[in-house]
Length: 464
Ligand code: AMP
Image 1 (cartoon, protein in one colour):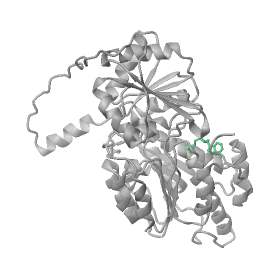
Image 2 (image 1 turned 90 degrees about the vertical axis):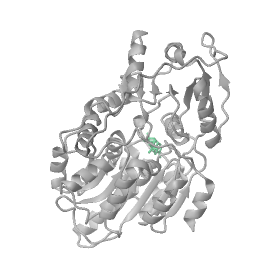
Image 3 (image 1 turned 120 degrees about the vertical axis):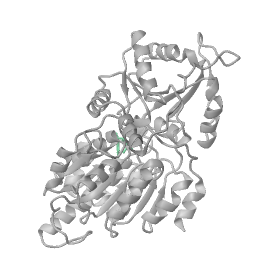
């Protein structure tokens, strides 16, 4: 039995037969701990703030009860009555009933797929849609025309749809913010604040996060209405996920990575780099060493990103080299190994990267390659996450006692002063390839500012 799946059963939640059938089809035998704690609160219509490990089953923890609530509402609306929600009937044109916000396009697709899978046999049919940037907005506008029950969105594209008058929020019953720690700070924060003002005040709010930086507490307190706080212990299960730290000279990282990929029979490897260019270069370097790999980052067109992830999930690609765009929520079945080619920028990001392996109680392995200039940063990551990982060296890749110089960066070009108009033009040109003019909001998934991790007292403060 998987480690966090307890001796409880889904029948105890009084789900509808359709939801129970969907649970069975997905092969879930028992609810996970986060599901046991969250599902009853969501069914009651309460606000929830839940901290749970990545891979602990948090998606189903909100999808199952929300769809149960929604299908009950639909059934009761048909009979002219309402149960948990208002007596509003089916969703009207351009309206939406449940809004789920996620930080990345891939996560939007994945979460919408879980909604669609669970909703498959529910009658009257429940319409689920994902919307995200990097693809044409028109088909999304068309899909919204008939109204949508569940909309899973990245915040930027949702605001683009608002600006295009393609969406109305007056029928919204519930808002889910997944990966709150990412969505309630930095560039995303303004977007979330703008969106939450557009939604009706009377709504259910659910927030899920794997980590909980202190800076977001006020915001969370403002949005949530006397939430049930569910605080699952621990971020990284050190018994299930083996963490290794290999010290290596910076210039030998490529060879060491190639060596590790050859010498170990890991079926699949997700390699994280800090920059988009590093991903592309690393793929070329691996290919030169006759190792096939595919790069994924936000400069790639959406179709290329989706294909890379789809093929990786299907097992058709052995090595995926990605920026932190792949670090959030992405569920890759039985991924045995994550390698940090570069260290993540923040201790939070380390937790999210680790969370790609060892999912739903499977065993996982994370290897961080640490060169001289990263020693100090890795200590911070360890301290903030309460870890103490032994340093190791690999024969043939021993560390020089003195740090070799880092490769020189290309010389800085002196900037000429630009007019306001030129600045806007230049910013547009620097943005990743997007569809023409209808995607004014950027994808912020690779631009997370460094922030300190959880403090236990935050949870105490929020309860006040
Ligand atoms: P999540 O944390 O939502 O990304 O889920 C991680 C993985 O756990 C996914 O592959 C889910 O399909 C799986 N999962 C979720 N709930 C259960 C459950 N009750 N039993 C078995 N697997 C589950």
